[in-house]
Image (cartoon, rainbow, N blue to C red):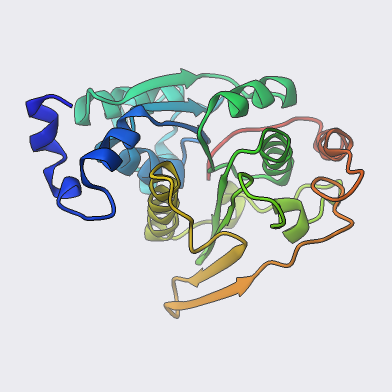
Length: 271
């Protein structure tokens, strides 16, 4: 780090679990984020401002006026611009230390697997089961930690699946693929703006923790948040020994293809 960076990240460096070595790990880190919508917006902003050195952001959607109610990384000036590119522009103004690689398209399983293999941590900010299962399968195959988030109406959830360790569950253990999409999208169901801010910020916190080499307290846990009652619940996710993705003799590719066939696309649009 140079003198400017030592000043910029001084409030992190003051924290014993981070210090100079930890901050350097963040600067050297690479996060793959799928979806630059409601969850991805705060997650990307906090990871970038915290000093994550490289962000690969995937989103095939463009900024729409209705997104601006919650997707805080975008502006009216970027309406019509691809969301990954819009996010890159916003981050460039906040922290030039963060190199953003925008993937301005919907990525299929093969490309997704390549992107996951190249990253240190994967943050899932997508909004449909087909994409989530494809991301999970790639993380299981390549042993990458996954930070999963979701939010709709007033309900949000966060879970971490650290595939660097053996014996824990994966996303499919929690939500087995049914071959059909849940159909719950913000476009038709609505979403409370601060909800995705809360969940996306938690995703950023866990991604940073994983880049620092720490164990996440949410590994194998599902955190549920109700923004109306302000209730929090945390439950342990059991490992499914017969899981079609991470179990004995599993075939993750078959699971992914089944969900894609049912939805007829693997969307990477954010909440």
